[in-house]
Length: 129
Image 1 (cartoon, rainbow, N blue to C red):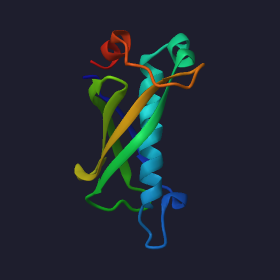
Image 2: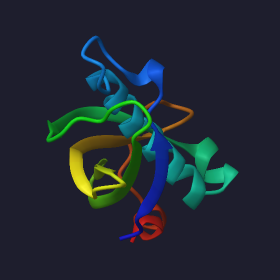
Image 3: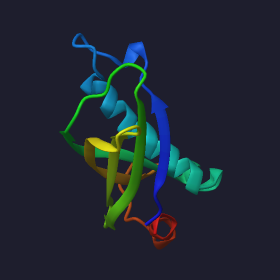
Image 4: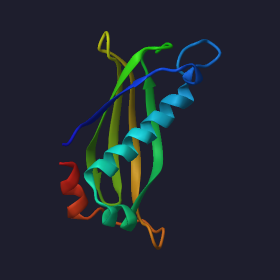
């Protein structure tokens, strides 16, 4: 499996009323890193031919992140079958390496023209292996 990583610094606008990262922001980061991973591994032809939509998110919050913390985001596709792909996203405090968030998202591949689900072709499965 191909792992994609990036680092982000927690900013004031990421915080909630308790001054730690808002849960909604974590969900946004899950979606953002999934899209970035797809874009880094594919060309414009595939990006225009296929789209991904979320079927479900399961997120475990294991710790808090505060202003100026540097978060390491790590993602990979754990499994692809039929029209569905399971992507894992883990977020760590990069200073302590403590796991803060673990998300499992079920994505569905769709045809960009018809907006109908598609079986994940081997060419896409190979991209993530």
